[in-house]
Length: 158
Image (tube, rainbow, N blue to C red; front, side, top):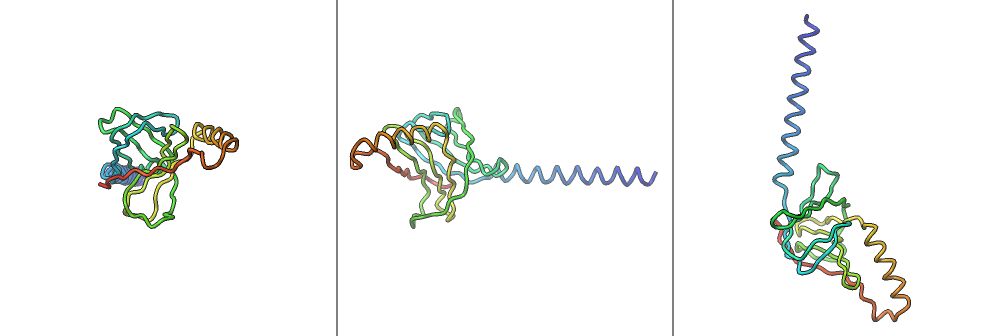
């Protein structure tokens, strides 16, 4: 009888601890700080094309440091894996960084302007294919006519 009572009490404590830790984790993601930016061009995140407009980007720690990118009206959402990257230049403002190949834009980095560490999105197969095509086309032209650019869009950290 004592063993059953002890086993029941142990299970109760375990369930309470699990519920408490889940509540803390969900509370942290709900209160996560966001980077908000108005993007003036159509861009790609992974395999999804997003129209120009206002977007919020937040880190989802419980999803393996993924980034959640969603439109202001929340009709478009993308979850994309990212990895930490350190600042090369001494820029401290919040911003989104895009890779531009011709007229195609790919979200590449997110900086909140507070930390020295930003988030770098993993390149999709689509971006790698465009990058390969661009490299071949650039090799056939003069380097001065290449159209790859690194584009930075100012953002607000909240």
